[in-house]
Amino acid sequence: MEMEKIMQQSNLNMGFKKTVTENISHNDLSNLVNTTFSVDQFKSKLGEDENVIVLAFVVMDIEPAQELSQFLETGHDALDIDVSTGPNADGHYSVYVELNRDSSAFESIDAIVDDVERADNSFVNVKFTSYENKAPQAWSEELFNASVITSSYDYVIKHNPEAKAISERINFLNRY
Image (cartoon, rainbow, N blue to C red; front, side):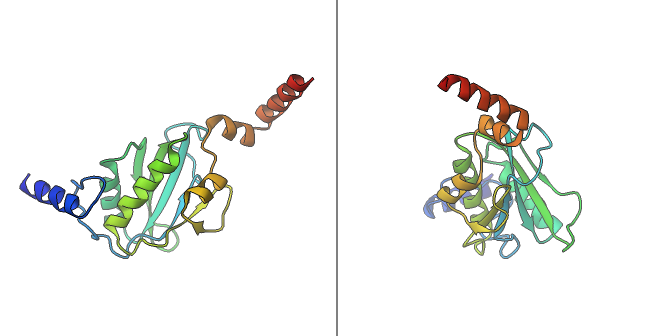
């Protein structure tokens, strides 16, 4: 309990938005998290894709991935946070974060990015890839909004041909 108070006070003195109460201290994961993360490129395991955005952070080993997962579980309104069951072809692990697809998605993801930056000071000049844009691009609200659909309705219209056809017919009838 005393260590938690010290960490909270230290975080307040450094201007952090939230208090860190998990096992990760400032910069504990230095050089262990890839600076390019994925947004909306994986299927949700808990809900329908039109309602959930899945993030994926690549971490160099299983233990730091588990630590990052536990760290992010505190202080974020995520539907689920999980570590990949095995390594990718490069021997790295992914930390998956599932969030609601809604108008506050950017703010939620940006808060998570801020926390990852606190755990890994080398997590700078962050980039992201998305379903709509596979090439890494700088993390910014403008590029996020251009690349990620945050409305469930718009997601269904874009990815479901039947829903798109119905929407087009309704729009035609409304103009008629």
